[in-house]
Amino acid sequence: MTAAVLDVMRVQRAWQVLDEVLDPEVPAVSVCELGIVRDVIDHGRELEVVLTPTYSGCPATEAIEQSVLAALEARGLGPARATLRRAPAWTTDWITQEGRRKLRAYGIAPPGPAAAEAGVPVRFVARRGREPQLACPRCGSEDTERVSQFGSTACKALYRCRACLEPFEHFKPI
Amino acid sequence: MHASIEIGTSAALQYLLRIGDTALIQAQRLAEWCGHGPALEEDIALSNMALDLIGQARAVLALAGALEGAGHDEDQLAFLREERDYRNVTLVELPRGDFAATALRNAMMATFFRLLWERLRESRDRELAAIAGKAVKEARYHQRHAADWVVRLGDGTAQSRARMERALIDLWPYAAELFAADAVDLEAAASGLGPAWSELEAAWREEMEVILGEAGLAAPAATPFLSTGKQGAHSEHLGYVLAEMQHLQRAYPGGVW
Image (cartoon, rainbow over all chains, first blue to last red; front, side, top):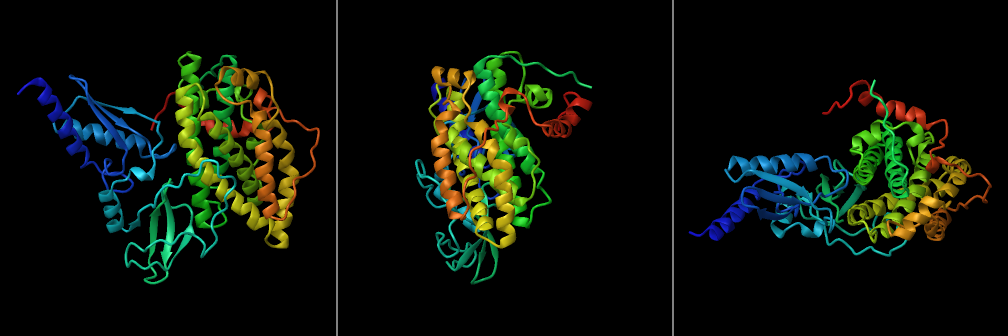
């Protein structure tokens, strides 16, 4: 095999390994499914993983960086380094279909499309009954209500299902 | 105790410190609500927003340190500067007050930040533009949440309305500082780093009028009062915020988690 083919395989293997690295806050989906890993570049001696942070203050950013590098090095793909790419900003639209399916199975209602809000002036929080209807990830009923715009992490809101009476979380579109 | 650092005087550095410090001190005041919110959900909301602001402040202060070129990272800038070298607007350092004051200040600041980040997305500094692209999304939901509380309290009970009216009287005069243009602003605008903050005033007043109007409140008349936090001349309150925030790094220099 030529060196070029080897390189391609190294990058491919890295993507496979990264697809097994779970998000520390939502340990049902991988960092690839969340759309955090933007690129893997083979620099010969070193592998570079390009990550885009989800929220400015996400405390998981550093933990994700460490677990990504540890996973690559454990599989003999290192040495690796992580770089941060801020633009374009992360959006929930980058969460894969498989990621959305896993979120739902984990009990988190996945985000809808992130609306283009540029230029929209003041918006108020939608009143009860006027907010977009979300299906309960447990029973599928759309008879749900928002309890709080903010949840256990910045990326989630709290909801309650009026049909099965279970509380659940919603990954907010951003 | 760890010695204080001194900072450069370039207009670009001052401009970035104004943004980073305003986000940082606003975050400190919001974080004071952690464990004291009027309801668990609101407690979580305020802490969430504080965390976003700390993330934004961290990114901007890191950029400021890189631009200054004196080897100061974001932690050194946050923890080792004296009060006079802080460049936040005075509004954010005022004591958090009651929940009405917190809601109103949040609405005033989130509206301001949303307008500022929208413009900074076109900064000639690519890193600042990238930070803004992320932060603007966060400022949008901060504004939505805070505006909602201003309406609920202003258009609520006699008690909540009276508290919101009091908050307006106390806080509104500090808004003037946000838009008072000076050499730092003009130079940032001329170099393409970011807008002169005075350019944001008309849109800010318009949006605040929408929020206050919805709440059945009115903006107080303008006064000649002009606070000067952006120049480093602060109210008596900032020193206490810094004493608490900086204590650990001053006592244990360079300590990390």
